[in-house]
Length: 159
Image (cartoon, rainbow, N blue to C red):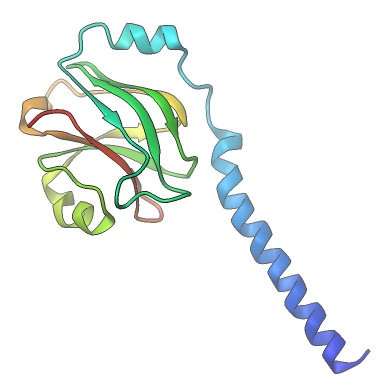
């Protein structure tokens, strides 16, 4: 085998492995995600909202692979979301005292935020709120990818 052919084969195989690895990182969270809450479950969790907001797709820190869109309701017991999130691993839901829409802003304010819980589904979610969390002390709900330090989306629920 010629040296040039061997190098081309090595490069193409490495590219194939890299593509497969990237596709696996993207697909695995979708494949292992539990069933999303139904519309009825979302409506039940949203019967007594204290606040509501909207995740929009076109925030500064969002992009093709990191976005969310839909309506989020915040009650003293749960945060319920009706909409879609870009699939990804290890999503977390935070409350922030200031609106954030980039990774730099999130990292700057992370120590002032409160972690609500894990987001395990990408079409709708319900995350329980601990009774000791003062919703009025915050004004923004944020979805963040903990593993890769990626901003997904945020919505301001009060001024």
